[in-house]
Image (cartoon, rainbow, N blue to C red; front, side, top):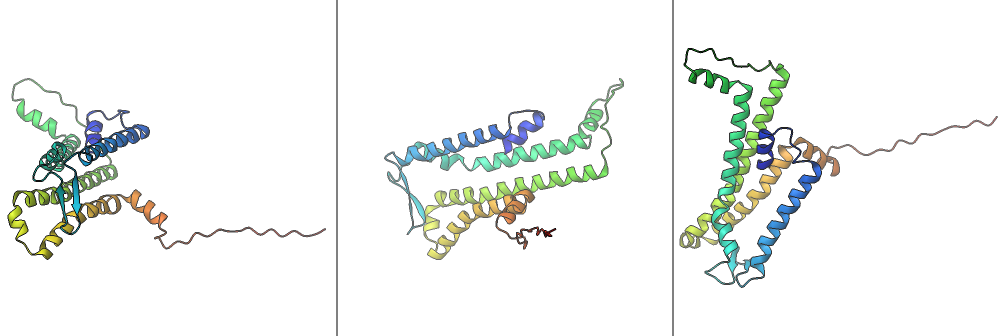
Length: 227
C-alpha cells in the first residue's frame, strides 16, 4: 500500500497497478512470505510454537535460522519506514494543494529578478473539503497501522531484549501481554478495513445481512379473464 501511494504520487497516470497486476503483486508477496516460512521450517532450526509456554521455540536454541534472525532483528523497522513514507506523502500533497512550495521558492529567491510562479487554479469548496477529509483519513490509517504493528514488533523485541525480566513476571501478566500483542494485529485489520473503509464495511454488512434489511422477492400476479 505504501509503495502504491508513493508510485501514484510520483507518476499519477501509471498503469503499474491495474487490477490484474495487483493480483500478481499480491501473489508474489504471498509466495515470498511462504518461502521465508518454509525454509526455516524444513531446516534444523525450525521454529515451534509452544502452547503451554505461549512462546516460539527454536529447534536449535539458543541459535536460530538466518532468515528467522533477520526477521526478528529488522522487521521492527518496516512499520516505522512505512509511517515515515506515508506521512511524507501526506505532507507533500498538502504542500502542493496549498501552494507551499511556491511560497518557499518565493522566500528563497531574494534576487532582483522577477520570478513568475504559476498559481494553482481555485478549487471548489466541496472538492477541497473532500480532499482534506481524504488526507485526514489517510493520515489516521497510516498512524494506526504503524502503532499497531509497532505494538507487536516492539513488544516482541522487549521480550527478547529482557528475557529474565519477562520470565520473572507472573504467569497471568505474561499471558495478558502475549494476547495483547497478538490481538493488536486483529484489531488493526478491524479498524482499517471495517471502521475506516466504508466500501469494505458495507460489503461485509451486506454479506452478513447486518443492515436489518430482509431480501424480499416480489412476485407479480397476472389475472387472465376468459373471453
